[in-house]
Image (cartoon, rainbow, N blue to C red; front, side, top):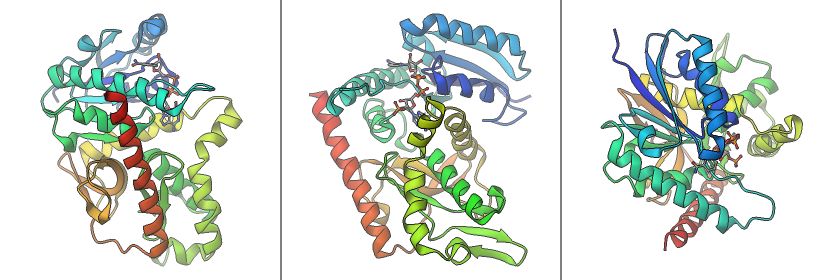
Amino acid sequence: AKEVVRVLVTGAAGQIGYALVPMIARGVMLGPDQPVILHMLDIPPAAEALFGVKMELVDAAFPLLKGVVATTDVVEACIGVNIAIMVGGFPRKEGMERKDVMSKNVSIYKSQASALEKHAAPNCKVLVVANPANTNALILKEFAPSIPEKNITCLTRLDHNRALGQISERLNVQVSDVKNVVIWGNHSSTQYPDVNHATVKTPSGEKPVRELVADDAWLNGEFITTVQQRGAAIIKARKLSSALSAASSACDHIRDWVLGTPEGTWVSMGVYSDGSYDVPSGIIYSFPVTCKNGEWTIVQALKIDEYSRQKMDATGAELVEEKNLAYSCLS
Ligand code: NDP
């Protein structure tokens, strides 16, 4: 039998947390033969709700779920975890300055980083979901220096999946036949969803999305804005933010990272930039990656046209600016 894996979910009593923990307990994230112990963390005002979620996990009688730790103590939550999904964060409230929101999140991610640094299992893999996801991940990296930088990532897989979904709807093809879109940059409205390398499996072989859609105005316009603004559209429709799709894409992110991407397919992940594609180094930026043996590698040598270059630079500049803002909150 496989050794049990401990998975931390912070903000576990929240919306995304509520959708995510049953997926993990069912094997959606790590596979149907991987036993797990869930560590759920939330803040004291959410403690009662958190214990309610724990009761439901017991009631669901998941065969793969070998234990549940539900706590408001960050140290207890982090002990021995192999995978950490950071969903908890301070939401932007009406009238709040950007700097105030950043400041709250910087202090949360700094303290959670220190707890992971001291108590997580060696080689713990970290995925940050809470916004501003890229910059929260960067702060976590800075304050958990013993966790290899390769192990600290943020979620842009939801944006990636949204891009696949839009192409599939437009062409009326199965989403599983569409692949290799790229989300570049920040998980914010400056992200650049790029279809220049994306393909669709057709009865007559793999075809470029650009050729099949044959409508550059749509691809360079409405497609991009739809993906960028999908979160807001869902809030408008549901009166609540996207939780099901965020949770599902978090599972996709970890599953592909741990178990590998299919041959010939890449996915988007926010990772610590090494300067590939002339992206500034020292920020967490979303790149196309392939995964094998539990490690991601940035896909190299994709051809970047002038239009893409400009969009990639703009989202990179925003991340540098966010980084500076975050650092100004530290001092
Ligand atoms: P959600 O579960 O809906 O969202 C959690 C975080 O994920 C938010 O930061 C949200 O950003 C972010 N997020 C990233 N991508 C998406 C996406 N595609 N759709 C929606 N959200 C996305 O929030 P809840 O308020 O329901 O739950 C948050 C939990 O965190 C609560 O249980 C709360 O108690 C806890 N919390 C923990 C804190 C701490 O650890 N100190 C501090 C504050 C709260 P965005 O805000 O931009 O939507």
